Length: 625
Image 1 (cartoon, rainbow, N blue to C red):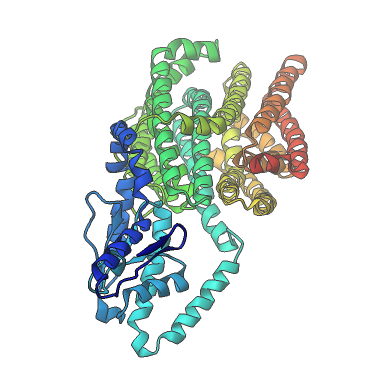
Image 2: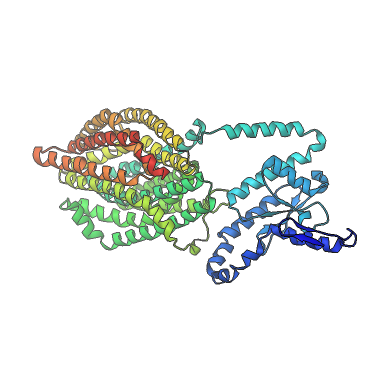
């Protein structure tokens, strides 16, 4: 025999005499499929990292979930059966030769490669005698495996009809797939509608819960409604921190989804749950321990009856913080994968429970503010439980289970907090400013407090369309950035801002027409009149200044431009909303209308700054980097 270094070898003997030797050479040559010699050099190091390896092989781990998926997906294809691998990183399924008209497994693999652009190894490549097996490695992420198995199922389905003139159907299907590939838009109008409408309805339901509490408590007396309003200003401060963390979760997960990285998305979600749980429990414990001095410092010398009711309401509602925080995070996960209907239905069900609880505890058991707080607590516990049960389902992008096995991942936590902290500071300072304003209003007497409380509710209701659109915009821009579709991100920011403007204008007009609610709520005539004066001013100014000051900012955050948004929002809030309000009250003796004059100035300046930022394109450069 004669050999060359590059070309291989040539046998000088007859083929019959060298048959065994040739088979051995072919076997050695086929080992190129698995480069096991270089791999063996890392085995000692791998054996030293058993803990990290074990996590991947347990439920929730990457390798475990990929094996479970490929095993189930292949067995779901009619005519294909597979045995679950116990130690290998590949699976060796069997095909029904008659069903798929297979005579040559190598040709089957080659046809699959040509038509579906997926490479598998035919069983004959491993000296399997019958042409009824192929091998597929399951180390790619679940999204890649899902695409591969979908194409395999389509391919196998078509082969079952080859004897029945199905070639025409194959051509038509291929043409349809080519048309789909030409589609560049990530969100058509139908997809946007399906995303935005449930979010807006959910925001309406959330505002409705606060309105129901206030309306039902108002029948107990002005002291009760004042107490609920004052404590809710603190609760909203905390809730905004939780909302910021949920927004960070939605943005990070949306980017992973846009990049089709299911494993990264699930890892990020688990870190969000861990972080939110620890922070919310810490805040709850702090609130329980320092409840009395906190309320005394924040609200100062208010009427004793109002303070007594505030103490009771805060004691119960502070216990609901962890449940609300976890629900917000879970809802954000569903919205990140464009499933906004499910959180909406959960919110609807819990709002019904809250109303029923209010009726039982406030009117049936005469518990006053304690009844309203208890009903809110129970509804938040239920919605958290429901959302996390639904997150355990395997047929969705984000799956959360095995909570006690979650361990901190520093890099992911830092990535989440890089978005959440600036947003949390922005939202927290925003609510803290409202709290400072509330403290100023609390010195004006019960009439002004009650009027301001109801005005806040009306203003929240007419703003839910805009806020809901902004929340949806975070998902849309986040997925566009993850997929590196930067032009689409810019396009959707403009489109959703226009949608928000139209919806907000209609909302303001409808809310202004709903002034009979003040009579239903049993408000005193003086408080109701003052309330409607402020609502009239809001109806005029808000459609002009609000949308550009808030909606584009949601898109900037989703693109990673969170620091700019934080600096602008905090600066304008303190300089306009707080400082101007206090100045008008102290210098000119104005009533609660001073609050809204400061608010209007804040909205106007923010709208100019954020519009300029968007037009400059600097926010997009940050995302591209």
